[in-house]
Amino acid sequence: MFDVRLGCDEEARQVLQASLTDPPIQHAVTSLRVLREDFETSGDVPASVEQQTPSYDYGLQQYCMALGGLASNLSSPDSNRLKSALLCCQIFISIEQVQRNYAAMAQHIIRGLRIMHEYRVRPSLDATNKLMPARPDRLPLLDVFIIKLFAAPCKFADPPATTNINGRRVSVDSISPHQQPLESRGLRTIAPDMRTELTRISTSTLEFLGKVSKVELIGNALHLRSEKAALLDSLESWLINLEVIQTKTRHPGPELLSVSFMRFFHLVLKVVLLGALDSSPDVDTKLQTENDRLQSVANNVGERVKAYKTYSWTRGG
Image 1 (cartoon, helix red, strand yellow):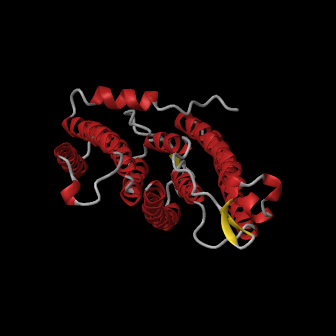
Image 2 (tube, one colour; image 1 turned 90 degrees about the horizontal axis):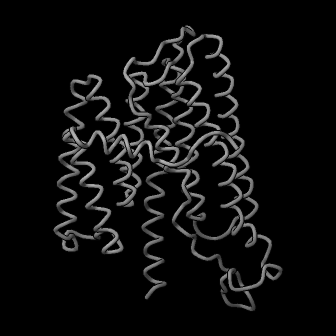
């Protein structure tokens, strides 16, 4: 579709190279490796202190040391410290994804994007439409990593929808499509259909961010502002369509888990786009509003995942 790669090979290379000499990143990488190995071995995140393994405790210890390094770097930021902070945010996001702690994951996303915006990692237009160049040092593009992370397929399958057949609840997946009520058919198709469109918008957003990084002329920057507005309109249209479909296929209980993740992804894209190219008090106000919404949706996703785990455990045994 576009000449945009959705793999994270470049981002991983940056992290591994920096980890050779940067202590906070070393701690963060070690934490991610240990916690991921512990998760793969146990199959879940410890539900209590009593269930924590020595390796899990060590992973948390390394995480805390990395967080301390991040705080130190941000207390007196220079080029190297900002690079370290952004790469640490990238790893912290991955750690919280492994931990399935989406509320904390959102906090790191918001903090990292705020660092990018505050320290002008890309060129931007100020309140008077003056083009402000990016910092001369090449800092990590955390927003690109975040979009690629969310563009990856959602690993949580939705619990099967049920319908009433002759007075008993039956899984929709166990009956043929022509026997399924129309509303149930809609429930099973909404996620992939809407996600395809959201992924298309995310790919366009990555292409847009690439152009912003290279902009040098005010005329080109103003043209990109129009492109940014079109992308934000696409996100708004996507959300409206989602709500229309949700209304038409309304069913008892919470919405599909995959839909909750898409809402999370939608707001991430919106926050990234709002902070790109523009730097003004008005934009900062809008960002604060959307950051609050992003955090709220992430909190909800976290609770939904806990419910999903309970469902999976009950179903399994």
